[in-house]
Length: 150
Image 1 (cartoon, rainbow, N blue to C red):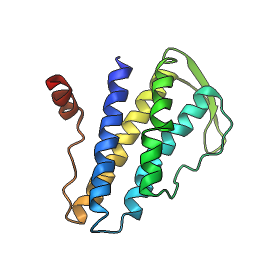
Image 2: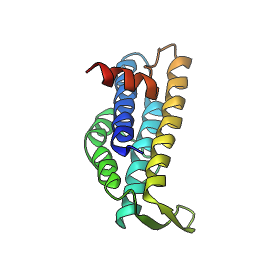
Image 3: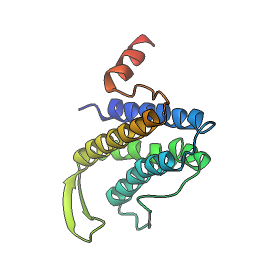
Image 4: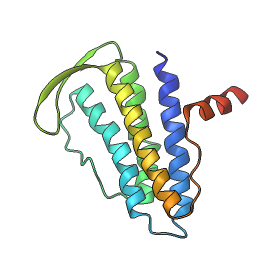
């Protein structure tokens, strides 16, 4: 599997949905949207910390501002996934949020992080639609079409 392409897609989709949140914040309260988006980013960081055995307390459901989300998107959260791809063939032993111990392939963790992000981007898209804001397309195939044109 080409993790670099999957990770590039994940960043592209996150960037598009955050741009939609930013544009919509001029007309609506965006706290719920930012909570979901912050969760996407912090889940990536949590998994990265597990893979690298970093003992850092990270809130899975943070209350972040738009600027904080933007800073994390273009900073730690994206760098983390790229670094994880280099360890894709390795195993990771970790303890989950309930204190249970597991061992997973890093490649499976990367796939989980990407699917998890898509799930929450879909929730954000639904919230935007409920407020009569048209969300951007974040489908993988849309990403491939745009990348193939470049």
